[in-house]
Image (cartoon, rainbow, N blue to C red; front, side):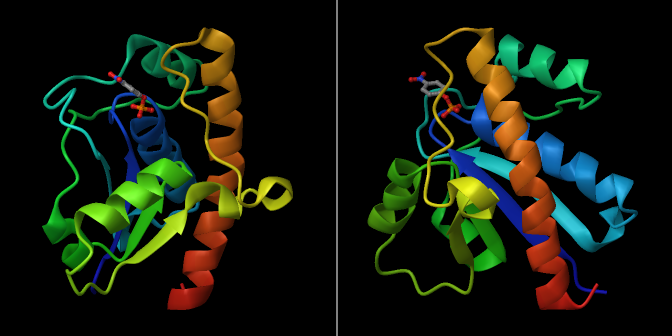
Amino acid sequence: MNQINVLFVCLGNICRSPMAEGIFKNVVEREGLAHHFNIDSAGTSTYHIGENPDIRAIETCGKKGVILRHKGKEFKATDLQQQHYILAMDKSNFANISRVFPDVPFPAKVLLMRDFDEEFKGKDVPDPYYGGMDGFSDVFEMLERSSYELLSYIRREHSI
Ligand code: 4NP
């Protein structure tokens, strides 16, 4: 069976996108669908390559039973060919993805994560890096809501 490749993208790949990766994996596992998916995350910057997620992201997710296992990596042009769904955390990440590789023909669908957050379509997942723990909790909630909707969307597209 061909797997569905899903990549979450933010700037640093230590806060929002590793949280999204962990939360979406958790939702997919709870639905018994893990065997259908490859789920990963990346950043559009090189700031934190090889690093663990931010401790505040690890703690916020850990309290909800979501274990983050990821090392920071940079978003690459090849991701546009290899991924089926690329979820940008905010409009700036979305623009970076499109701007860095404007000439690469690609099959991946590049989407904005909060377009799956029913009452907040078009909004960004705000960068919590320079704020406190509250920001991370808020990010968790919006990512969890969006993850359920994203999974429903993918299930409809793939009839799974
Ligand atoms: P992220 O947050 O994009 O959600 O991982 C950030 C992490 C680090 C930096 C910016 C945003 N930074 O400038 O180092």
